[in-house]
Image 1 (cartoon, rainbow, N blue to C red):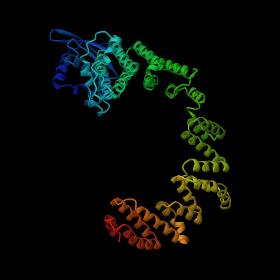
Image 2 (image 1 turned 135 degrees about the vertical axis):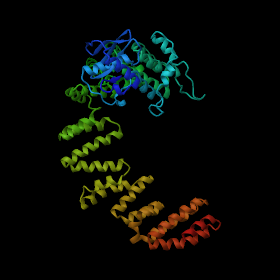
Image 3 (image 1 turned 120 degrees about the horizontal axis):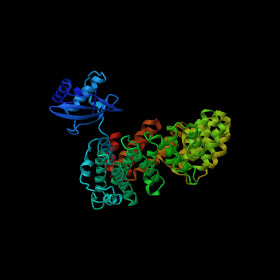
Image 4 (image 1 turned 90 degrees about the vertical axis):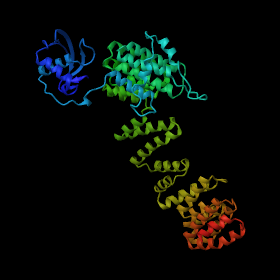
Length: 535
């Protein structure tokens, strides 16, 4: 858009507006001739007649022509005043936000932001265009353009594997300039050359990826921009479909498929895209997730809800989550169970628990207590003994039932000869939860550990405080002999402070132990300093 008929009088320089208004008021604007959106009139200026043309759409001036040149001149302003009078439009203040940049400027901004993605958006506008001005090729020869992609590339430093593709950047800049000239054939050739050369040459690195994505954006623009002729949009679209079916472009299939689902595509091209994607999903090989998602999105845009649903049913592994959610919402628990069981069987381990979670929801809805118990039991033993799973499992039993259940599985859990630290603490937590003091004491005495003793203290302190303090004492003596460094002394001091504060037996044991430790380590001065702070 160049101007609006309501605000042009406050948009341009006052001298220009005054000169054009004078021509209009003096009757220098001839009869208005209209053909669809185009308005023409002869404007007399001294002895010269100017054939002025203005294109108006929704009271907005979108294109102009005057023999004076491409800029808005007094003759164009005079014709705008005549049109303002013709349409009986009142003058309003000019709002700069109403003016949209021309299409080539918007394209340049998008490409510059893609190429210089590490910079803030808009800070590199015009950079590619400046580089593209040096491209001198007159014919859109894809082979010659491909040869230029790697020209002028350089490595940031000698050991780098990833080049900076200055050749490709120059071509992309030239594409922006050609787009301004409406040479869409040349733009198409550059997009093909850059994308194909990067993919066939297996060029890696951020610069190559940025240039390839910029080339895809060129294709997207050529497919959807209204200023591009329909025949050209169709030709580019066919090339995108071709690329989507070629392994050569596999790293950019997702971006290319996004073009096929662009809602700005012509309706006939959307129909063709839907047919192409349906052919892929109906073929012998399993379609990729990107192709399925693209087909689903496109069907949604076209309002084909039933075909969307059929696509989901034909590809349950890809749409399992959505199908389960819909079945659960309508309380079709049989369908939920079937889909979830299929997922448990076919998916990898991390995904299996997601489907088992749906089976749990069904079991809760149907009050299937046996499945609920088996779910939490399995999750407890296979998921690293989480306390939440233990409590959920335990809560499904009465006290008498749980006592019998505990006697069934606990012996085998205890039978491990060399348990891992995680399993050792899981067993200790069971003893604490079930108040099995004798078993807990035996575990603490067998596996001397400060953390284990702290965990056991609430259960052991009432009836076994002497044995617990002996375990603490043995641990502190062992820990003191590990290292003579100050940090070891600080750690030992903090642990003794913790035990000393927790109970009277702990305070007594620590007070008696400190002189003994001083005797064991008479030359460990930093230890005496740190423990002295505690005393």
